[in-house]
Image 1 (cartoon, rainbow, N blue to C red):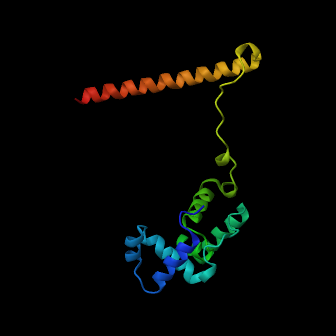
Image 2: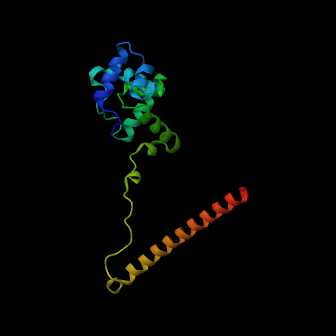
Image 3: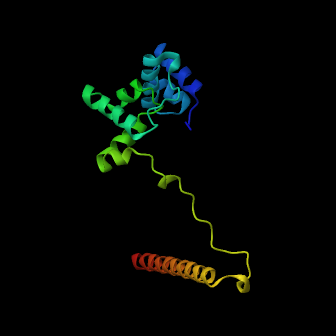
Length: 167
């Protein structure tokens, strides 16, 4: 979800096209002037269709097509993003970075980032009703938790010693 509404972007871009300086608008609205200039560029290209949801983020193939469009025309990230009607040039920048690091696989949707954190291992069953496997699992969890807490305490003590030495 975008930080700024589509209507806000359109109104701000229109004000800039009507002659109001992006710096003045930036001061009035407390947002970066570069962002206002980007919105103005997108609005100038797409008019009232600017900032509508697009399909360029749907799969790795379309992301690669967007990058190839930028490379073949020797466009900047900002200009390519504006041509593609993206809400921000940062999206294309992320795709480029992932492509440079991991190739086409980097552009595929990653399910890793959307995994939920594992819930705590505290159980509602009494110990007498738990299976041997469940007891072993809980024991391993508690040992790991204990080790983390010990390490944290050790780091805090080391930090205190460093501050004492500096005095």
